[in-house]
Length: 296
Ligand code: NAP
Image 1 (cartoon, protein in one colour):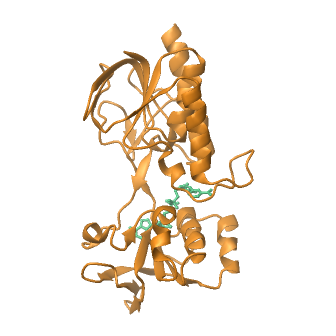
Image 2 (cartoon, rainbow, N blue to C red):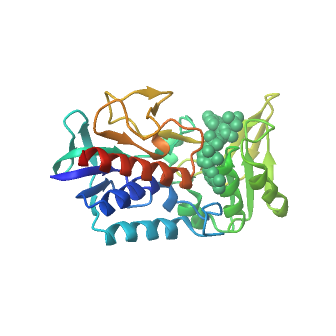
């Protein structure tokens, strides 16, 4: 039996594990396949204090190594169900019991909702520019979205691809001015504004993208890749009994949920700023709160 089970090995879960392990408790992190979460899929981080520029994977690796060095156990297993009241977690391989649980499962990419999306995912449609960009070297691609992720993906892909169309449904961007200003230096990024995805072309692979503007004009973009970057949804499907707001788990300022002994941190909780640094920040708070309350 573990003192604390942490669900999710992204920056929030990793940080929570470091705090709990340093407090001398027995702690394990469960994650499906690997550590790092969304951080590990991010090409470059430029706003994590101490590193003016670092790859997401490298930062995640440093965190994981630190946690492992402190004795945190990493269980790479898929979670099937969670009984929050009884602090039980069932994976496809095992069943675990603990005294406290920290939920840090983060968020997953939002889907476009296009009928061809599922069948062409992996055959031209991707949700991760840094994972799949290389497959589109010297080809044309489209990035869908207007947030920081879309801008960063477009910037990253512009270094690999022949041409990048940045398709956004509005004129104004959600991304920060700092990110947007970077676009000026890129001649092979074309903005396609006030436009939405109408049709994805290609039988077995993406062979084009039809977009529709506000006046219902259609335009076909000659692309082989479509990178969807339209935000994320919190991974909360395993949980019941905790309070939600707009899909996100509600916590107090100490990262407690409404269930005793259940804490939550990172992108899965209700908060205003979802960044690596804020995930680490509330990971630290969740870990420290769990630690204190188990020692009481
Ligand atoms: P986001 O900020 O929520 O932006 C999502 C974008 O996708 C918005 O422009 C939105 O359009 C558009 N969109 C949403 N649903 C759509 C749909 N069905 N069809 C077409 N477009 C759609 O998401 P994000 O860019 O993934 O960023 C998530 C969080 O991570 C943000 O807080 C962001 O600041 C942070 N982040 C930070 C950094 C950094 O600081 N370096 C890097 C990446 C991400 P509307 O604007 O019209 O709603």
